[in-house]
Amino acid sequence: MHKRMTITLDEAVYDGLYRTVGKRRMSQFIENLVKPHVLDTTLDDGYRAMAADTDREMEAQAWTNGLIADLADETR
Image (cartoon, rainbow, N blue to C red; front, side, top):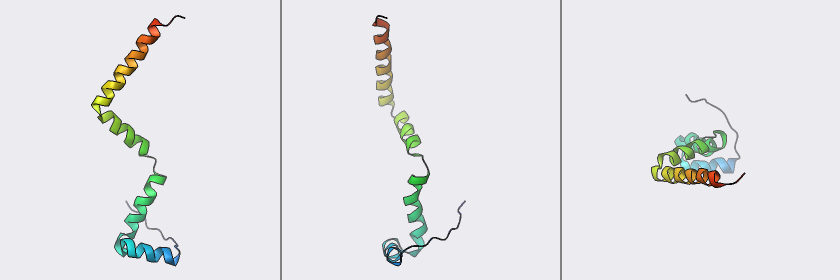
């Protein structure tokens, strides 16, 4: 669902935006610029990408298991 809003821009900024992206694409352009700053999904996306990397996950598992083995040998 989209919401309509009115914003005020400096005339030079508006003209540059109009020349760069065109009248019909301004809203999408601005939304794409603003979205990463207001929706905190970057960490989620990064974690999903890392979890999908099976080689990296196997290396991380081996490293974690190595740490556990080191703790078993440590004197208390």
